[in-house]
Image (cartoon, rainbow over all chains, first blue to last red; front, top):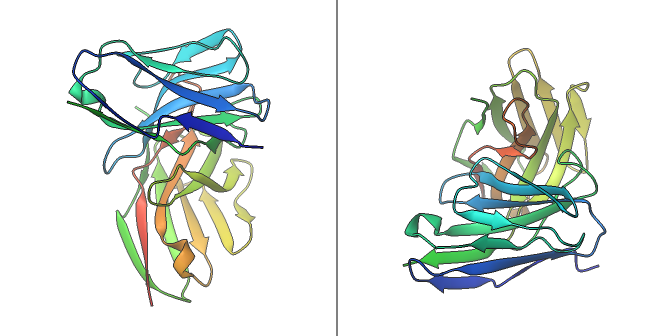
Length: 113
Length: 114
């Protein structure tokens, strides 16, 4: 199993541009989530999904959209990037719920100029 | 609001010594805690977890202690090795926030001295 994969690894955007961060898992996990990590901070939950067709907001959802059309994929969309969204983004998945062991992807480092 | 936090941003220990990393939380309704290890440039890696009906749980060279009375948990690493150098996060499932995900502390950078 590849586990949780994320693309791209690095991305530079200009303010106002849009992009999608990809996340995929091959473990047949129902629960998937997106976190952002800022310097000196722990990870903060952006959005999560408990199964295909179901998404919900986390702690810091503003400026981000998600969808879950399949069990495997959970893309994160930035509709109009802002410098405040410069961060490292991690996708995670677990078997069923947030309290199952969560497996994290390698992260996407995003810089918004 | 609910929070999970670590006491020290940096901890320096001698190779071979035991390391103790501490964490406090603010919500007594928390029922699940996890310790993650994050190496530079990588995603967090699960180390060990503990549920609120337990006081102690042991893994390979690691032990997590949970003191619900003072809302404190700790990660003990025995015989610290160079490969243990990383940032360690405690995280919890905290109820009442309306979000079904993990709440992370800010992390402690464990530095191993030869």
